[in-house]
Length: 187
View 1 (tube, rainbow, N blue to C red):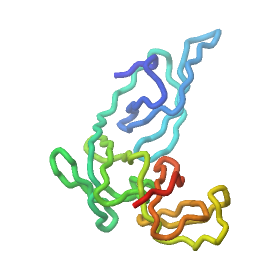
View 2 (tube, helix red, strand yellow; view 1 turned 120 degrees about the vertical axis):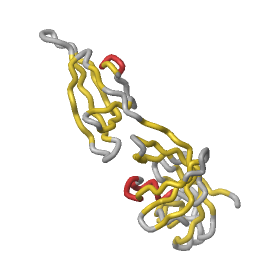
View 3 (cartoon, rainbow, N blue to C red; view 1 turned 60 degrees about the vertical axis):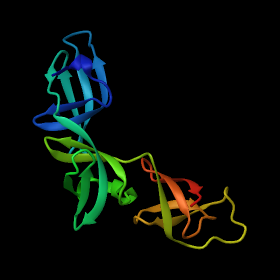
View 4 (tube, rainbow, N blue to C red; view 1 turned 90 degrees about the vertical axis):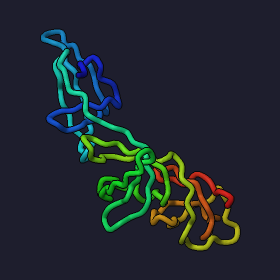
C-alpha cells in the first residue's frame, strides 16, 4: 500500500483494478479544511489521462507489475511474438498494445516488457536503434548537413525526417523516444 505522502512522478499505483502511473501531483494545504493531493495519472493499459484528488493520508494499492527482459522474434498476423530470455517461453503480444514503438523494432531485438497480472501492457525499447534506409528521394548536388530535411522510410516501415545528404541503403541511428534521426552509421 502507498500513502499520498509517497506520491511522486512516475509512481505506479492501482485504482479499481487498473494500473496508473502518476504524471503530475500537487500537495495542497488550504487555510481552511484538510490537506489534499491533486494528481494527473495515465492509465497504463489504455493511455488515457485521469485527474483525481486524494485526501491527505489516503491509501492506494500497489499494482502487481512485473518487468521482464525479452527478445522480439517475428510478427505473426496481428501479434508480435516475444521470447522470455530466462525461460525461453514465447508470448504473443497484440500490435495494438505497442502504438508507434512497433515501427522501431527489428527481429532479434532485446526489449523490456511490463506485465500487469500476466498481461503485457507496455514495452521499453533501447534508446537508440540502428536501421537501414529502405526508401528516400535522392539527394541533390550541394546538399549539406546544415540544409533541410526529407522523409525517409527505414527497413521496419517507420517514416522519419533525415538530412538531404542521406541516401537509400545507408544505416542511421534513431532515437526511439522521439523518432528523430541522430546520425549516420558506418556499416
